[in-house]
Every structure is written in C-alpha cells, then in structure tokens.
Image 1: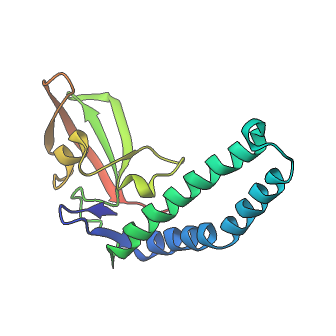
Image 2 (image 1 turned 180 degrees about the horizontal axis):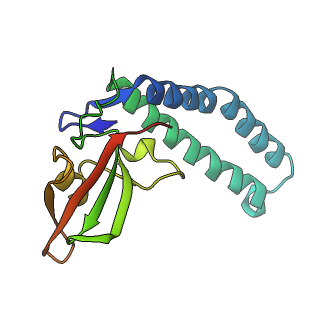
Image 3 (image 1 turned 120 degrees about the vertical axis):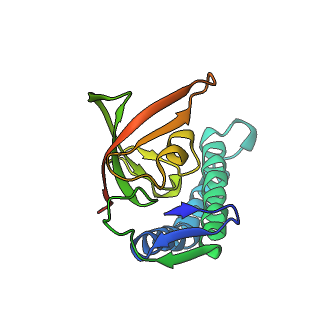
Length: 165
C-alpha cells in the first residue's frame, strides 16, 4: 500500500477488502450501537453531568472521523498486485536494514501507509524520511535519509520481501 502525490492510494485486494469491511461495520452496525448508547445515556437525565453521555458522544465523533477517513481513502484507492519479490524495496514490502554498516543493529519494518499498520510489525510510510530513503533500493545497496536534527543517516538494505498478513 502506498500513496502518491496525487492522493491515490495503491492497495492490494486484501488490504482493500479489509478496509472496506471496517468501513461497512463502522457505518452500519457500529453506528446503530453508538446511537443506542447515546439514547440510553440521554434517558439518565441531566446531560451536563452525564459522563456516559459525553463518553458516547466522544466515541461517536471518533467513529465518524474514521468513517470519513476510510471513505476518502477507498474513493481514491487503486487496487493492484502485491509487489514482486525481486529484491527491490517498494511499498508493501517487509524491509530489514542495518544501521551505519552495523549488521547487529537492524530494524525490520513494513513499508506501507499507516492505514495498513498492524501490531505485528512496525510500519513506516513511503513518505517518511526512512521510507523515502530506502524506497527503490535493492538488497545490498546503501540508502541515506535525513534525521530530525538535519544530519544524514546511512543504512544498508539486508532484505526486502512482500508482506504476507
């Protein structure tokens, strides 16, 4: 999964299906559930001091924000194939790097949009400094990216393989 500068998000079919299922749940059954929570809390009386009501309204706001995010994301999505296992770093790949030539100091992460982040593996956006530095590089190549302090860091690409959820 990656985003281009034209706000097009490339998704695998699996990622699209997962996000679509989340949207369907949030805009259907989850909306009904939160409306019932709000109605039940409203019946308890004075809304100014009703913690349950305020919590339910806050939950509803977060849920509606996620519905808008998913709707926009899926409207601009292009479904494509998973990246090829050709050794080149691309969005949708699990990448292992070594910092500053130290093979013991490694990091393995998924290069993908934050929308596809999971708890299984750390995710870096292709637009992040590290993501943009390694994107397009091949196994064995060095890549540089800018640190928050303005200095450049160097990493070596050790492995790049398609993500399998």
